[in-house]
Length: 338
Image (cartoon, one colour):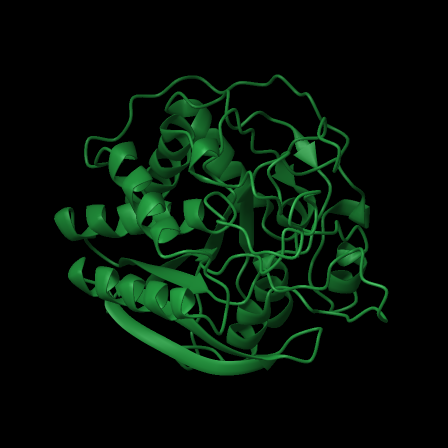
């Protein structure tokens, strides 16, 4: 996915017949300064613990790069399954194989934990748990894998802390939450590759899950994807595919962030569309999904931070305040859903 911006992704999605915004135009509202009136957070929303989330990032990194077909990858997957069971989730594991762009067959696992599983109204929260197998943007050791503290580790850490909070503060009524960890997201073809272009080489886990739903017939009112949500000084813009296909979800998230004091992290700014796990969920299911992903137009990549697919994506880039801003916002959205 994230090694290359796919500005044509909207056209591909439009070809599927999914509804789009008026005239399918990109919104030109970058830098908007609108701010909703502050509101008092609902009393039933627990406090997201940033120290706990940081510890979850540390734990994942301690296994080593979570590259498919490695011992670290297998050990991390087992750890995630056990943690979600410990936190009271109804856990299901989807094992499958996928052929990578280089012909390698990858042994992969998508992991889902359901909370209040009998509820009819479901919210899907997702992240990817694998890490990049090469540091293809780094001038030093570009063939070696990265720690992926932010790219992979941070999104999973936020979901694990949400799982811990859901065990301590069970959901009530007809609202349930499903935490879905996608595998094989970051094993895509490098931009620098001289081999013929391989379409759909990124997001292997979400491609498989969206075509082979687990549980069978699964659907949700909406979904939220978390990707690269823990780096220092991160800002989260409203990604275009999310705006077009899940505009109301985007509005809900960003307004909530402003209402509870995290407007600095969630500015009313728009960013171009990219291919990420939400792309395939939108394309292959009836679930509208918004992507919370860091946006840095000042970086040399033009979109992602300077750590992206480099060895600097390690624990030093992670900031508890960023984890807190994202985690508390998503937890608030979930816990106040009617």
